[in-house]
Amino acid sequence: RSLVLHQEDYHHSYPHCWRSKTPVIFRAMDQWFISVDHDGFRQKALETVSQVNWVPDWGRNRIENAIKSRPDWCISRQRTWGVPIPAFYDAADVPILDARIVRNTADQVEKDGSNLWFERSVAELWALVRPADWCGPEAARKSTDTLDVWIDSGSSSRAVLMARPELSHDLSGVDDWQADMYLEGSDQHRGWFQSSLLLSLAGHGVPPYKTVLTHGFMVDADREKISKSKQGQGGYEKPQTAEAYIKRYGADVVRLWVASQDYRSDIVVSEERISKVAETYRSIRNTLRYQISNLYDFDPATHAVASDSLTALDRWILAAVAKLEAEVQTAFNRYEFHVAYQKISQFIAVELSSVYHDVVKDRLYTDPANSSRRRSTQTAIHRIVQTLCQMLSPILVYTADEAWEYIPATLSESVHLTTWKPSNFTVSETESPQWIELFQLRTAVLPELEKARQAKTIGKSLDAKLILTSSISKSSVDLRELFNVSQIELTVGETVSAEVSKADGQKCERCWHWEMDIGIHPSHPALCGRCVTAVS
Image (tube, rainbow, N blue to C red):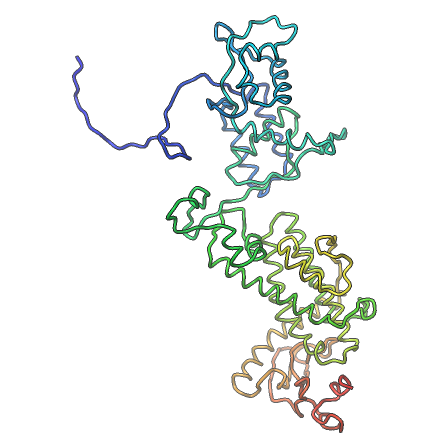
């Protein structure tokens, strides 16, 4: 009876276009589909997933779940642009889709371009692509549907890789045309990764890639997604562009920041975070400068010391570098660039800057220029700085190459033209445990030296005389150098203890060591014997 019982306005959600932000109008139409379960295709796809290396590992579960839950693939779109679906319809509006017609259409498109389908009449197209022995119904109209764009991107392996003659098919079963890696965001397990896999499997029986690497998304300090559409909006208060950061910090700092991030989850980008990485960059750069500056008079052909003649300290650092190389290479091979960053930056801050560089500066600056001890350290530094440049070159591409130019007697003009071959340098079985014990002692001694400084007993650590009780009765390592003190007395005991007092003798004006032989050389009354030899 057309009686209205109730009427009210209410708010409800309505689908909107993600790009234009306007309401979506629904229209029910016939569509073309690919049956995912035809002839066991879905199961074949799931089995093929195991042939691919997924980075991170959870990528495999994600694409498996996407394939398991996906419906049949709707491949048609009602758009006025795109790749046309080469279907015809007879007078009864029944579709005509024949493999020979599709092949003939593809040949014509390859010859004249895809606009052929849109510009030619039905009669012209049908005459071009109709098989000579065609016995079926005649075409009355052509399809106006276009292919889903995931067909375009998903078939890129065939269009790009298989089209290259040098990437031929290997009869052994390994397909040389397969991409070494597909790399995209985590949303592509339902997008490009999946469409590429399904199309390649349907056409060639193998996945189009050997490795798939998935990364998270860039978010701002408020953990909001950074998008191109937002960046272009007027009045947007949080612009985030690589160009802006590169102008401020330089490309290498931005690259280092990217490498420092665990890309497997979303990455927060902000001025504060990049500025912290810039501090690490300065530490790396200063380390390279320090090492290169101490090679100014070093010619490897003349001055290099054989590995078995290096000092114990130099052997230790080269063994530590070899261990670092192995760890960094493993991280690179696993695409764990943030792990490589952590390993390298920590090594530079601790083993190099806090220990090795601090300990060897005395021999570098005050030993006679051609002394075996100084040349030993220069030999080690020459090897280390080359290794650092090679390890850093994938990340700090400009800095590593710049530093490489100043290293004496390198075998290549550019670090990027070298082959990084990690060292297998090791210390002996007797040396390794000794170094563990020595660094435990150093850890115990340094706080005592600091206490003595605070108490004004000494000014610098070289002003100190150290009475050390430990299980070590003698060592091949110069403990005065390791602890950076002028004098040391060793006593054997089960408990480690360190007593700090003012050093005996007088202070050498050149090396700042306190020695008993200062003043016995008339020509240099303010120098110790070692420094007299050095300046003479």
